[in-house]
Length: 429
Image (cartoon, rainbow, N blue to C red; front, side):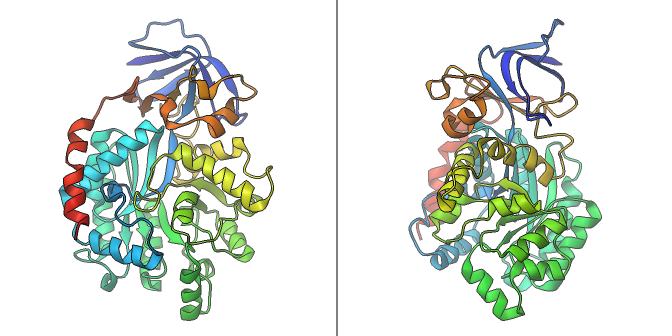
């Protein structure tokens, strides 16, 4: 099936960061031409005259099924937050995990995200719901010490079973998730890394999110978390470290030498008041691959990556007293090409180029917040002026999942109708 997106401003995010005016043509799952006027017959025509086409955004840190827990742990100290969340997590059902995932997917689709990295348990349930929603899930089963989990059986073995069951599913990428050094001993961390290396799949984990986490680990091991993970061989090219806020320059250099990625989650860190600002300029200087995550709906409470991208830039500028850091083009790179590299899919995602998957988002070029609209200001407009309200149409791997503001995969009204009942069952205790 040939789909032609006609007469759009195309923000390619290719190696030259070209902005073209013309057509984007998709054959099945993949893009076949960009910018040139397509003169052939198309099975589906999308009039995008004057609109902006960007690559699908990639959210590199979420806990998507937690969307049904919004507002239950707001405005309380971090230790009490964790205690309450862990207690609720232990009582979740397959149904509320499914509904939470579908709500999260709908929210992400409506804000231009076509791929997300998830860290949770029961990723088999999450995978099925994500497949119904039609976007791509890099689903990393949560691995931690067996005596520290509410999972049935060994978490690493559960992760391996999940991988075996879903490794060939379309738009589902099984991965490995480590909860964090505070509940993962050396054996657990090594086992997770070995499995990630064996299958060449993403390995994500929380890292140095709070000062207390760092101090406790130093007391326990004599080393800071990133130093310890490096010394036991866990850091590597498949690794995506979420938060990464409380780091020394030595740790940044170790992470760079390992060829790994970080997922900065500024809204979560600010909302939880955990302090620390991820050293984004230093990551860039030494060669750590920088990406952006929203975190989950209990800590953010939004999965809107467009808003997160802007917030990251503003936080960096403000905290550094330097308006030149985290430039608009760099911020867009973080959520597209850099994020694709983080999940090992840079050859298929992150830019609008022939041969890549058709993960594209059409933004309303006629919206007042995006005007005046010229190639010279387009990237800045997208990053600093754009919002989820500008998203008109979304494709993921050639499938139209949102068309002119209408969800085409899941029944949003039906999914949302059960959310309040689930919230009460989980949270009013």
